[in-house]
Image (cartoon, rainbow, N blue to C red; front, side, top):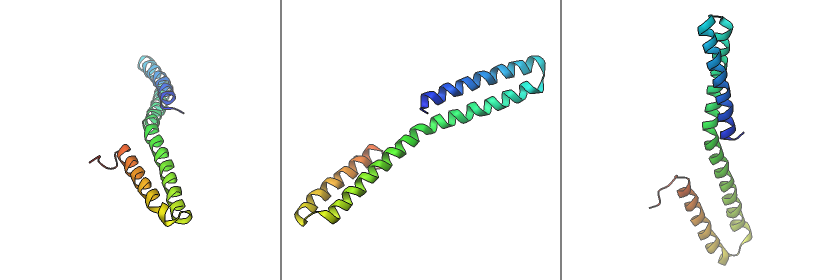
Length: 109
């Protein structure tokens, strides 16, 4: 699910929790208190999942970049001539630095 979908679902459960809390305040019935707590917990869990969605996507992208780098490095090691190695290695190093800067892992200086 996307972050937007998770937040929408969290809002839905929060509304249910708010309604149950209001009903509990008016009636004192324990079933409303239980419903309030359950829906409040679900809403909190969904908000936490939504916040983690961006981090998870960044992790997946970084993992794909690492796979690309490893594949390119292996190709340089196994399938290139000595003349090509220097050029391809230089390009690989530049790309690794660029990705490191893009993800804030290293400074741009």
